[in-house]
Length: 245
Image (tube, rainbow, N blue to C red; front, side):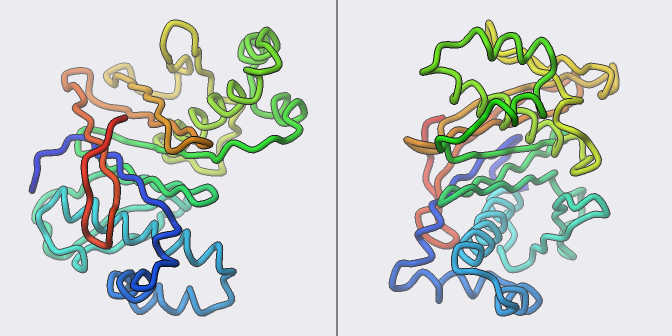
């Protein structure tokens, strides 16, 4: 393993794809199959998100392993969850999770447990019906107590935590977001303990991806291990720099 990163969270701005050298620089990080997928009628927005997420994922995996980015492949399991694989790896690859919203792309890798990450660009929308759909009664009660100025942000906090938790559990669309419960008073706590083995600890982290975007990471790990998280930003294909949470 390269830099001994237990959990790495990597950020990218999808608009890097639109820079003069962006598309050409990113193309070299794609597999032939991925290039075919891009040519199969993707919108420009979807192209940017897809390409930048793959480049970011391979950059993260290269940082973790010390292997060239081109040796890594990203495949989906039967639940649609991404998995990393490389024929050059002699040990178990890390867990990986990807998310994008608008121009924001985030990838998380972990070698100490199952990980899920989600990012959402905050936009004004009718949230009451969605809140009924995804929030548990106790979460809804907390949501309803918030001021008008805080309701939208509170909704997105729950949304990103639930999406990240669902990804970490590896259940994808098989799980309703309402089946996951979080408490966001006095820190962030995962309350659906029946969904995880008693031997696992659950860590929940929130972060700002940008001025109008928030995200969350949920990690299921052995209770005997503790997470050390590193945050990095993609500045060019294959190049990252440290950033604050």
